[in-house]
Length: 227
Image (tube, rainbow, N blue to C red):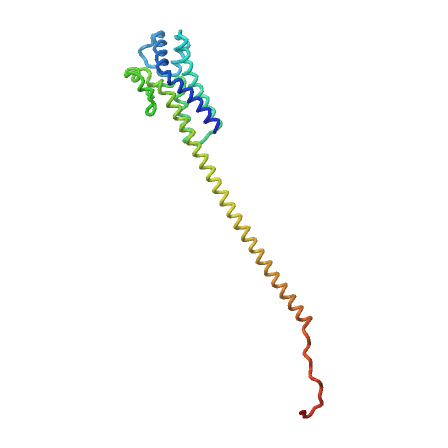
């Protein structure tokens, strides 16, 4: 779990650097959409951004920021795959991962995704940019990161619950075992004390029989009257 948290932390740090350059990202999309003669439809998928970079990007700055977006998407996708393999979890954690996988699918339609408070990525766009063109693509990364952070929080809580439950069971087992040993010891002590008393009684009786003196008879006198 610590490795997962650390990986997610690094991805989030990279995202924050990317977020600080959102204006550069939007300008890169503007340039490449214009080169592709694709100014009408919104940027609605990861594969669309990949296509712009591969076929319509002729500026080093534009290429760098588009690469950064795609790289973060790949890092998040790899993390989801690793979590699915190493930490299968329950239906709640699996649902969170499934949602992330769907969002990070190359051809998934991002048009209707919107990051909400505390994220301000949509607010940094103009009205038309946010509503028609880039609202979904700029919301993808913060939404997925939030889902993965929710997965971590939920999974940690489950682990703590299991550990606490296991400790309670162990404590109850220890108390039961201790009680059983106490009863067994008390029974043994009682039997031992009883045997000791019986032995002492037998020894006393033997002593009395061996050491009891016969009563002394009065001296013999001839029959008749005696003063």
